[in-house]
Length: 422
Image (tube, rainbow, N blue to C red; front, top):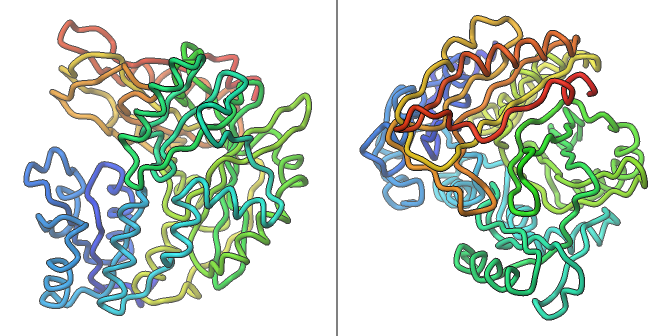
């Protein structure tokens, strides 16, 4: 498909289960892939088992990576799914004169939630209400986060002053910069996400989604059990935000890559507000769905730019707006994992666009925080909601994750009516 990529050597910073799809896509395009992190136990870094070569070097050890990349004639580097790895990517690319889709200024805007919200206000992108101090909070519940962590790390929901003080300290402990943000916890609106791809400065909306939260979340947890693509209210959300978001992306000087904006939309009041964004590969792993729907597999944007410095070979197909995708997240109850079965069987379904196990036997799962251990995820795409519902039912039967007492460890399962009503 991309003749200029064949035979190129690429180093991937990170080797978690999350990197596997990226590694496999690169290999499909004829790229020789090296996965790097410090783990010598490859069950902790399953990406190394898939890559063509594995380096037991931390992705944050820039000095050692630089030496090895020069010695091994590596052509480019890539990272995703973590702002910390993107930070290392920027440093490594600067030293080796590799193309890099992001720079430090862009990273800070998308990594630091306070800087992000300041930038949103500059471009009139609506944001969630925040409180400057613990003492200024006058309404509960609130959600408390480290300003510099993603993936729900360090997040808590507080329903009282006592809970707020504990949540604040927890977020502070997990913040690298020792900064915390307190926001209004919006529970009367649904979480939505907008995903944009940028090719040589041209901005394209590639997908949007709604969120199904776990039934037992209450005001204690922020577990997202499913994402539904596209967002049911996409037209209304875009009418309120698309122009200002595009101006913000342009103002940030972004020329290549993908960026997502996460927010809340209330169908009754039509209120819309955003609370974070990420200028990186995201954990929804929707690349196969976006390729089927159009305009392209967005992993190709990152791979082409990492090795060639541009993306002119990436073909843009027509978008099929009727194609849906249902992505199911599996989170764990408290316990130790005894057995995992079923993920490999999902590939037999033609509608399956994702099957990813993110847990391992012997892993201990905790339930004391707002976010739980991620066990895995899967996705089905199609135009018929009834077929997608049936596939999800079958997948729940196939996937079997048990604890040491042979009890099901899956915290929440999406109900049929939630799929059909979408």
